[in-house]
Amino acid sequence: MSKRILVVDDAPIIRLMLSDILKFNNYEVVGEGCNGQEGVDKYKELKPDLVTMDIVMPEKDGIQAMTEILEFDKNAKVVMVTAIDQRESLMKAIRAGATDYIIKPFEQDRVLSAIKKAFGEA
Image 1 (tube, rainbow, N blue to C red):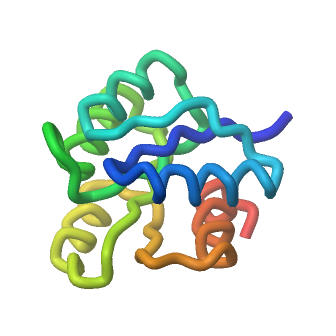
Image 2: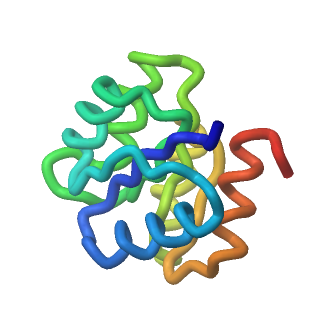
């Protein structure tokens, strides 16, 4: 059975790129969210195996959303997606419980490496 992944990012093109990479590599994208609150709500509804979560988003940022997801499910796996200039936020996310991270602009190999590491397959 393929791993189920929720993709959360406020940029539609990033959601599309991540979804395409994941689907092409036999992961099931079970849903998408366009802000942190939607990410939390969809996590609770869909209970995916992993979430890719942008850090900077409207309504609720990715760190707040990840914290809520981890409060709901302490075993949740969250891979943060961030731009290179957000290093401080990224460190905060890792301290708060992020499994791994992907820097934008990303390459397929880095995305897959982070996902496999999160699942203990790397």
